[in-house]
Structures are given as structure tokens and as C-alpha cells.
Length: 326
Image 1 (tube, rainbow, N blue to C red):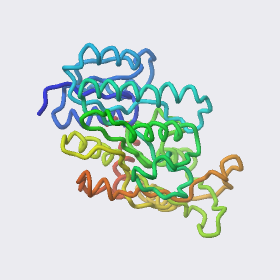
Image 2 (image 1 turned 30 degrees about the horizontal axis):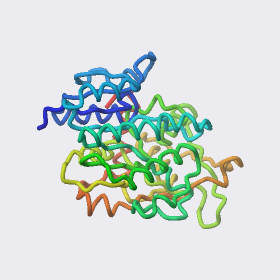
Image 3 (image 1 turned 180 degrees about the horizontal axis):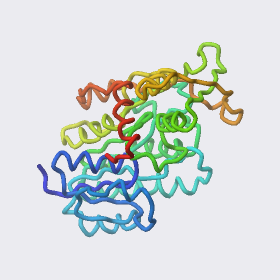
């Protein structure tokens, strides 16, 4: 096992903190955790008890890499602004596009493998499908600035002739699991539905405004955090072909499936109500997302079986009940 350091940006966040835990469980303690550590708050609990060598502020990292580049064996860049309702483009330019480009260039110069987080939000309304083929990437039209910032970088990355020795952009679909409690409105619907049942004994879903879908029949590719972590760790393999890869289950499920599973896991009677999809998001609301995972399976050779929605929710509810961290 390599003794060189592994950098993880966004280490206080949902996926980042869980990746720290996953790597620790595999014996990787040579970690450098990167985030904004200046703000006190619940997110600090996400890495409590985790093992790491160094802690670096997000905007100190580029200088740190220049000074310690020969000590670094891998960079997982997971940090950034993930708000789908943020309307300040400058924020996304700085935190997502420009910052990721700076890390890419450093990793290229210092020959460090580089895995960054893109997003399924790049697919927009899904009218072009959900394939991660590179020729499709420049054609995608995201529905918000967050997705646009990710698409801009993906498009830039696939055009580069000078690259890190291995690079990958991973596109998580609808991720749920422990350590997301701090995300508020941006947390998964599983967490929100769990809290609705706890507070009101019911779950509220959007009605369908398209005849081909029943109410609650809208579908998403929900992927459990533990499966996402397996995908990230898989890319530590130096023999993987560089590129953009979807990170989903490849199996869409309905919101009704999800809601009914939560009631079943909690051993509570189903109580599902419906409201109209708000007018301000109705035209942009996605009725279907499903990752095309052919490249992940056949090119990167990731062959681990994904967790079923039922098993994932059952496991996650155990964390939610006791507010445990991964």
C-alpha cells in the first residue's frame, strides 16, 4: 500500500467525510483533509475520530501542494459549491470551475493522479439521455448554475492534452446516506421523508403533471453512499482508463417506492399525500434520471453489486435514528 499522502477536499462534507472513513477502514491513514475549518459547526463532527496526517484550509491547498508535491500520491477533489438554488455565478466560477482547474494543472505538473466530482446535474432535463460518452458532454444543457459549472469543467477536461497521469470525473446521481444532515434543503429526499414521518406521520410527494407518470411515479437513480465510496476507491487503481464516468446504480426507482420503503422500515402505516409541483420549478422538474453505467462496468471494470433501494434505506435509517456518523 502506498505510503504517499492522499488529499481529500471537501473533507467535512457529505461524500468527502464518508470517503475519509472508508479509506481509514481500508488501512489508509496517510490522509490530508481539506476544507474550510474556520467555521465552528456540526460539520466538524463528520471527521471526529478519523485518522489523518494533515489538515489544510481550502485556499491554502494550492500552495501546500507546491511545497509538498513529492509527498502526494493521489488527489480526491470532492469539495465545491453544490447548491442547486445559488444564483451567483461568480461563486461557482471560483469554487467549482477555476479551483478545479488549478488543482488539475498542479496534478499535471507534479504527476499526481486526480479524481474530481462532476454531477448528474450536467444532464439537465435528460433530453439527450444519460450517457457519459465524451462526445455528448459539450452538448449537455444543465438547468442550473451548479450543473453548468460542472459541465464547463468536464468540457474543458476532455479537451486537454496535458493531463494528470490518471484522471477521472465522477458523476454521482441521487446520493443518500449518513453525514448529510448538515446539507439542509440540499439533503437527500430520504432524509427529508424520514423527518416528515417523524414530525408529522406522513410523506408529501409532488403530483405528476405529465400523463405518462402517475402521482409519485417520477423516477430517480438513487445510490447509497457506501456504493459511491466503493466507486471512488476503485479509481485508486492506476490501470483505469481516464475519463468522465457516471456514478449511479443504473436502475431508476419511483418516489412511491422510496416512500413506501421508509414506512415499511419504520414499521409504520403508509400515509402519503400529494401536492402540486410548484410553478417556479414545474417546467424544469426532472421526471426520470438513470445512469448509463456501461462505461463504469466495462471500461473501468467496476463490478461490485449495488445496494438495493430497500437495503440502503434500511441501513441509513439505522444511522438516522441514532444520529451516528459514518
